[in-house]
Amino acid sequence: MKTMFMAEKVFLVGGKIEPPYFIGREQEIKKLTQDILEEAQINVITGPRRIGKTSLLKNFKSAVEKELLFVPVNCLEMTDLTDFFRVTTQALIEAYEEKHRIKGLARKYSGIFRNKITAAYGPLTEIGGSIEHAGNIYLKFLESELKEEALIQETFDFIESFSNEKKEPLIIAFDEFQELRRFNGSIFNTLKSRMYRPPEVRYIFSGSSISFMQKVFLKPDSPLYLTAARTELKPIKEEDVKKYIKTRLATRRIEISEHALEKIHELTGGFPFYFQKLGILLHQEAFLEEKTRIKAKDVERVFAAMLDELDSEFEARYTENFSDQQKKVLKYLSAEKQKHLNQIALDMNTPASSLSTSMRELYGTMTISKPKKGLYEITDSVFRLWLKRNILRQGQE
Ligand SMILES: Nc1ncnc2c1ncn2[C@@H]1O[C@H](COP(=O)(O)OP(=O)(O)OP(=O)(O)O)[C@@H](O)[C@H]1O
Ligand SMILES: [Mg+2]
Image (tube, rainbow, N blue to C red; front, side):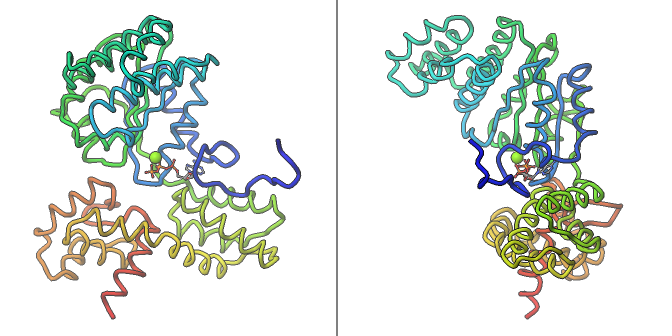
């Protein structure tokens, strides 16, 4: 129950983001809807970390769920092929349950992943149909009558027979798809063999590794090279960011200067996670200090505090994900918004040609982008400013 003490939040990070907190992306949702409802069987969404991929999927779900059953699947929850079966089938049953307001299906089904085998049969027989079939398959696997590999095939069999049985077209949306790169390629080959069937089932694959997505979907020699439609997620437009911040602060009677709004966009690079978080901190400060107007200087100060908060996360990102040479590239690249390859090579005192593998890999994980030929930039502007402050400067002392 809402009480007068639980005021609506000003900005929002995490959880399900809906309007008015969810902004922009009209074009992306329109394109995805068009692709999904009319043509492509596969949609590939790529975008760097924190750009808003998961939020886009959630809002796309609201846009199409009348026509189709939308099934979000989080690949982060999968560490082996058994998980691929478990997480995907479970997500499908849960989505169906939620949409049609049926209770108990998912709970009964999930017994096979928890209970003693003997206890799992009863509830499965009660449900019957394709769910019972999938459950029995899994029990066979537990009794070693089936190889783990076969579970991939069975996952797709279940998706198709469930859709058939319920006369319901489906979209399966695999989020964080790059997590499956450690699995053997048989997932992708199985997927391929399924894609030419009548399209009652459509797939979305969303991820933050361009190189992996390209390897699997977009190159002519890749396992799933077909008419995959592609959406590349970009930062939110400056006008939209400014309008959003201004309107949200206005709900608390706080004004903000045009210059401060520009600063917010510039520092966050239009990455939604960062402008929401900065918004929270700015509002907090204004509230505590009883300020009614925010200026560019305030934004700069609060932004520095945000970098402090992100310290351990960026520290881990920097130390764990890159080779020594890649770290050096990032360090020197962080000095400017954009840099020429030749300048980076000069800074590092090495020929440009010796950097090509590092540059390709950094590009493949969307850590850096190429605004023009020979010109590079760190995709995540906040990460760049953190590197500049914590790594570049440190090195110079
Ligand atoms: N369109 C949007 N409008 C406003 N805020 C957004 C939007 N998209 C995302 N956000 C904000 O950014 C946060 C992170 O978004 P989200 O989790 O969707 O990004 P992601 O690309 O999936 O990130 P990751 O790579 O970490 O999975 C959200 O919690 C929300 O605060
Ligand atoms: Mg995500």
